[in-house]
Length: 305
Image (cartoon, rainbow, N blue to C red):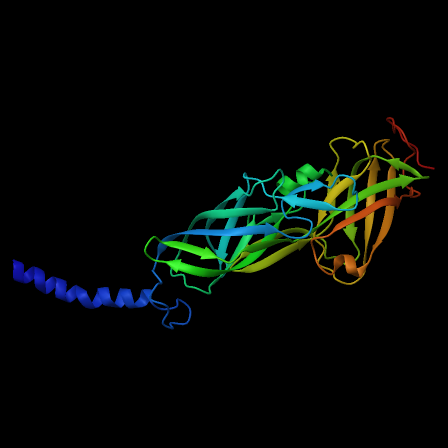
């Protein structure tokens, strides 16, 4: 019996050695990797992170400075981790000290078949499918649902003793800009029930999906339905425009008086050359097209003159 057992173990030895050797090789190229690599392992990843420019998720308007926005980390946020387009896991957020901290520590578990110093990882807030439709014109809603950001990090250390990984600090950058729109007729603000914005360049993004490390955009207009009229008559909209040359936005607006309005606003190239900006457009003058109904209730039998 003992002899048969030893023979079986001897027969299994080449298979075990082959598996161990495979764990030491790059899954794509077959090249030998650092002995610290471990196949199909669960690792704890920890790193520091900051938010760049106007911020990436939680936004607030600076007091006394109506022309800028800032960002801060909230402990309710979730960061997803990818390597070469494959999902590895999620990280929780522990904000640094302060009322609205710009810095935080990210930590969580990732599952990856081999990881080594120098590997590049992609971090995203909050998910791989981005949707810009269904906005209501408020900053609170944008920070909860329509503000997306990414960061690229490099693995700094891999500790096989306790299965921990660290990385260089991440800087999250917005993948869209925040616009503040205000509409005026005859010098007075109007409060839209809803409005749709379209771009003449045709590159206004309704949504983005990630599959096999390839982003696929869906282009089209963005409709904003106001839940109520803001006190300052200004509406915040999250827009990703992939046009980098000069563009123009066209607006089709339904006023609170049920009248129809239109407007066109030129967008300079320097606004579109990179996402992550805060753009004020508080003085958009609207007009009523010939087919627009008169202000007020239409009644049961509207007449078009």
